[in-house]
Image 1 (cartoon, rainbow, N blue to C red):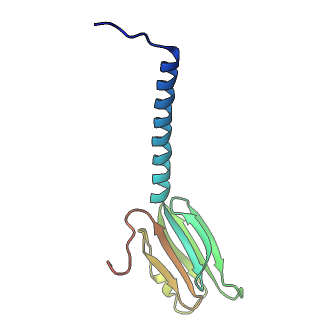
Image 2 (image 1 turned 135 degrees about the vertical axis):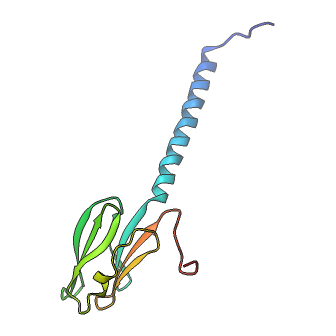
Image 3 (image 1 turned 45 degrees about the vertical axis):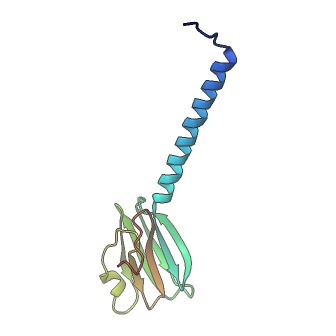
Length: 128
């Protein structure tokens, strides 16, 4: 069997194609992970006012537009809850902890909705 001569250009082309394939796989994996990420979003009267990745640990105060009301949102070890609020009844505080996509915390007096969004396991209202 006769060996074919290997040219330098053939080696460079093969290396380039391997590198391009690797980069495509890498970029696809990063984009896939980004799409699967869970986000905690806060909506005041239907308008998004804050957004945090669920894997960050944060404690922040969300104030109503007229500055007469406030809720303290906590994200701690991928657990989301409202630690305190100055609304009557404290129903939003009593709702407890949410951790999965599609779950919500609601404060009716302040027209505040805290929702976990994203991920592959997103639950819509019909399937609940």
